[in-house]
Length: 327
Image (cartoon, rainbow, N blue to C red; front, side, top):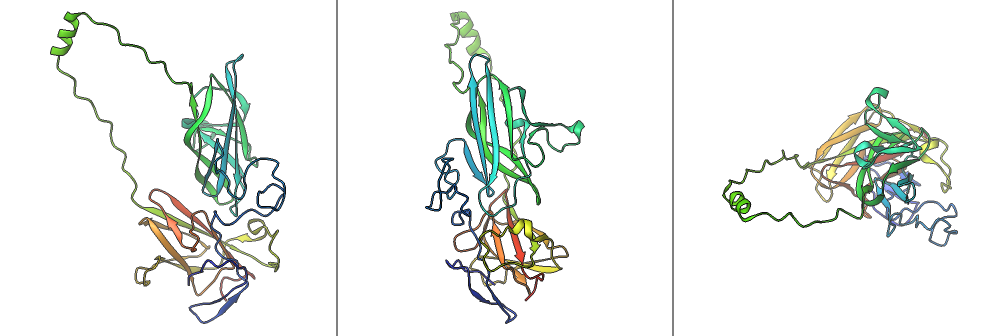
């Protein structure tokens, strides 16, 4: 079963089993699914006091990166008198993904000594799996006060913790001494020194070990079971109102546009499963003898095909309505 991307919320699908499912919500790609109006979007539904385009988050915004359905924002302010930089780092869900319970900045993303701020220090002795700085549990922002001048440039790896676990995302990077090092002229050598240097053999440079480049990706599915879903779902919070987990079921994954002969099937007793070592490309997902009433993903095209990229995990959230997984 393939869900076509049609600009409507009420459609009728004829399943492979011959059954009919009505009133389904279509796949919502991140570039077409704007947030419900909360008075801060830019498409005529309300004011925009924060200056961020929530309908196209991260676009043309310095210090803002959207990754995996989450908006990571970093703002730094240098105090020249005290020679310290205060950076505010926050994460927000930009569309229909689980809420942020904690934001973590790994130590390797921080280029200067942290002197103060609002954060939880993570270290192996505290039982943490990653060393770095995190927001308080339940918060989506933290503050780091670092020595010297620090600016926002490039990108860095962050971690977002949700009800689905820890999700690696990309965010704005931090760089120290952004003005760069001052180039100086090399010292002048005497003719004798130059001759001796020229005669000396050049050492063979040692090449650092190469890191294997990933060639495959994965696709992770989490299923929720929903009851009492209203017809008007404008303000319906799917992740809060639906229970995580589902009855045993089978998923089928095929390359987009194929005949289905290359289908990969996996069974799950809990509604959660991951397709590993997938070739990069576009895929179509089907629940065998079952159907969902809503499906969202952090990497899906306007044609409702899932995108798998090398070295990355595409996440899918499926919602089964009326307390059942079948129709």
